[in-house]
Every structure is written in structure tokens, then in C-alpha cells.
Image (tube, rainbow, N blue to C red; front, side, top):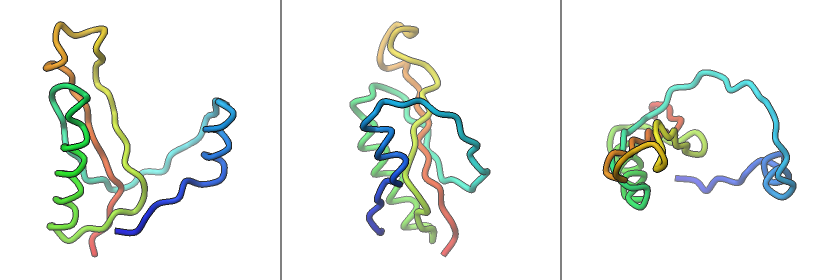
Length: 91
């Protein structure tokens, strides 16, 4: 896997706290649904990255997480559901 460098616009926005709107093009993603505390997300991201490598895909950009609920709205962290995604293409 090649290291990813954030685009200049993203670096600038990280520094300024600026908010923006953009259109995100459709892309093929490998994904995994993690259930449980956010503290376990790193292990799930690693599992997803291994799956990508073992199934003939390559990463095409940075990963993302979609939080389908949050700690404020659930009774227990065990109920948290997070979808992890990486844009991919078949090698």
C-alpha cells in the first residue's frame, strides 16, 4: 500500500476549521460494519485492509467512517454501529 498525503485544500481546512460543501463522485468501496465501542475501530480498519489485500483489490484513497448512531442515542457502547469504507479497484 502506498502512503496517502492529504490534498492541500484538506490540510488548509484542517488548520482553519473552515466548513465547505462538495460533491463526492460515486466510487466502488470495500466496506465492513463494526458493532461496538469506537475503541475497536482500529482493529476493524485493519481487518478491512487485510481483506482488500487478500482479495485482489488495491486502495484508491483514504478510508472513511459512517457513524450510523452515536453514544448519546444508545444505551450502551456495544450498540454503536459504524460503517468503515475504503475506495478500491480490482488489481
